[in-house]
Length: 173
Image (cartoon, rainbow, N blue to C red):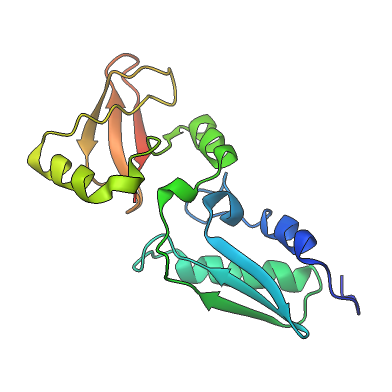
């Protein structure tokens, strides 16, 4: 669909909500909160994207998918801006994203824990973390961390001691 008129930014935001995260395809790049701004500079659509962390292996794929999707919608000129400040935080996940993660079997970050990452990280390293991660399958709080490393760098491996199911926990960043 190629058009001669430029779509408004609200329409572009709707289109971006159709672009899935390549590592967790049930959430979009807007659900994830990494799209920070959409604006027109003349006939160039500028999309500011903040990676979840500087070494995220999915960043290049996300950028490619955003551009490809916008081109498919008829946007001829797209420029992506990498915005590193402020850094992304898991607090930017939308409520819809948290619900989609649970339904997919991934425990979303525990609310409010990303705002104090330094002390939470120190507690985890000391083995004194009192973080209660709720099982996305049965809803139990009786869970245990199996490994700090899950299926992707942004997740940790957990197991529910009630239903005995393993699951990923989306780490607070």
